[in-house]
Amino acid sequence: MDTNLWQTLGELFVVLGQLLVQILALGAHWLLAIIWIVWWLLGVNWRKLWPVLAGGAWAPLVLLVLVVSLVWSRLAPAPCDCIGVTVPNFWWQLGYMAMLVVIALFCGWLQGLLHWEPAEINLEPPAHVHDHGHAEAAHH
Image (cartoon, rainbow, N blue to C red):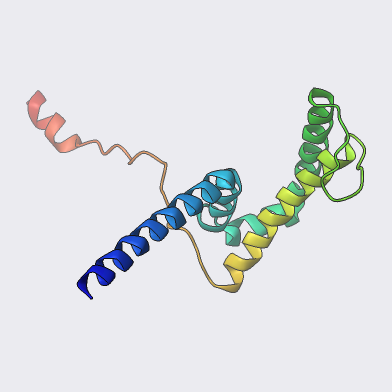
């Protein structure tokens, strides 16, 4: 009976090892997508970004998506057979870029829905305080 138990435990560890390898391979395959989602979900303060986008920053965003799609279509000029039909060059790159923007906006909506907010990081250097009393005493 002990032999069967040890054999079963050995098989369990082998299967768990295979599962871990497959999960890591899947994570490595989707690494950039995971980083993209994590950044827009946890690294951006959407409470501050929504008013900026509404105030007109959406226009440079749209222009950036168009320019990146155009450049990408010239760097890799090929149609895509990725969704069961052939999507012409430029249009699939534009669709891909639009998908990235939609994912980012969805992350912003989700952050607001769940009331998440990243911690504030102050990048300003501390104000320099002059000790005038000490300087005057040194001159006397």
